[in-house]
Length: 205
Image 1 (cartoon, rainbow, N blue to C red):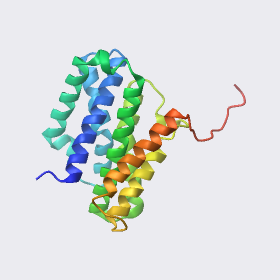
Image 2 (cartoon, helix red, strand yellow; image 1 turned 90 degrees about the vertical axis):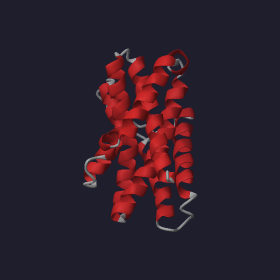
Image 3 (tube, rainbow, N blue to C red; image 1 turned 180 degrees about the horizontal axis):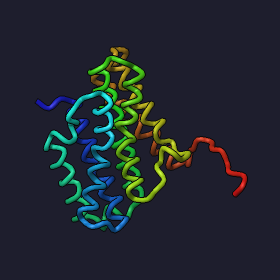
Image 4 (cartoon, rainbow, N blue to C red; image 1 turned 30 degrees about the vertical axis):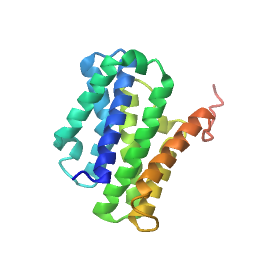
């Protein structure tokens, strides 16, 4: 039976795989390049999380379902690239939603294995931002987590909300969806209204 968190993980994988495929197409990578960027975006953060938890082999490499989901995402972008890649808002939305899904799933899985609040928040965040960070590096973009963007902080909020459910402070049936919605809204509102963290200005420039 497919549990709520299995569903969240697989749907998040598909959303992030779409995001990675769109990024690869925009950079005019060949089909293999698009697949690689899609794959690392979809499962990169989860692999880092699983390695930190000594949960080996990582689920993203062991379970063929992830490969099939990534292939499906690449096919979707290949067939509908004119409709998908022409809108930057689509890329931003996919990234924001994927961020929420993986923050919730990563925090839940870490709590299930460790029952450590701090580690669950940290690895929930890494699950959410790790794949996007690798994607940005492969597409020659400065990773969002190193800029003044509200990105990793949104994932931290999402992971924290999920832990409220994992620890029984709120309904465990409500917490993952509340975490996903909150994380996604924070990210999208930050993009829309250009809300950023302060940064140290290089006065020599």
